[in-house]
Image (cartoon, rainbow, N blue to C red):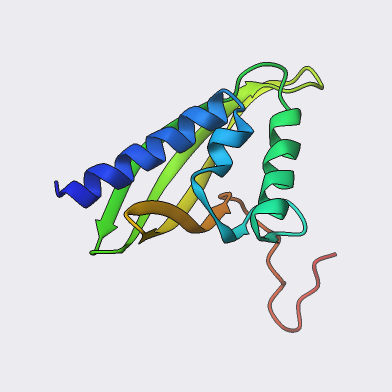
Length: 142
């Protein structure tokens, strides 16, 4: 593992810890001011730190207590000043509506190092799922 790999791993560990404890200021310190963030909730794309902060606050507010966030299958690729990682997350906890559960999410994170500091510049969250498929031409779904 290279030094850059270790630095990215530490950044991602800090990201998870800040999410688990709902520490919005610490979390946002890991993101570039011009972050582009894709999520599974509308409007699906959040641009800039203000919008991303609002989205994280919305997510944190859904939970009664801490958020369980486990990282699985982490893969990191680094260059001199650019890095990306992809992983699975198990997001769990008790929602304010009383539901206790967990959901798997896919995450891709892109980072850039500027002035010696790594920041997240792009993040993409997706959720595995099945959608209704169109019926073959000439067939009805009725």
